[in-house]
Image 1 (cartoon, one colour):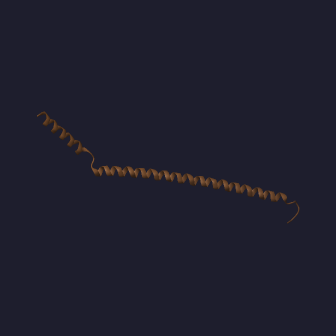
Image 2 (cartoon, helix red, strand yellow; image 1 turned 90 degrees about the vertical axis):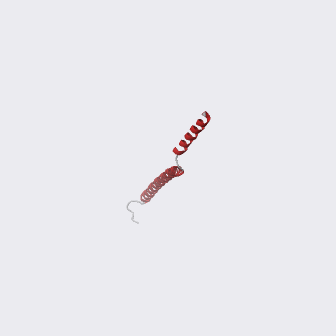
Image 3 (tube, helix red, strand yellow; image 1 turned 135 degrees about the horizontal axis):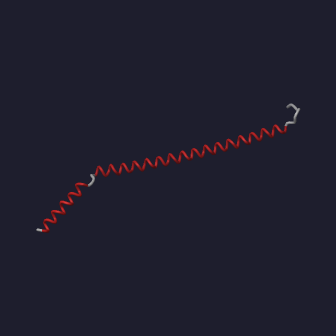
Length: 89
């Protein structure tokens, strides 16, 4: 009799655990939400890297423009220094 009651108790507990677990649809929905979240984070990371690269490129271009302006200014100053006062060209 004890064995029968033990088997019934084990069967009842097993049925309870199985019935309370998540369904297949719930598991799939949870996995899809996790994948979507990971994809969103990866997209934000790529966008952040692209923005940083664009900012670095803009800074490099600004530095190149400043160097060119400095070279132009020096060239003009040198050409003006070569001109002798009182002489027209």
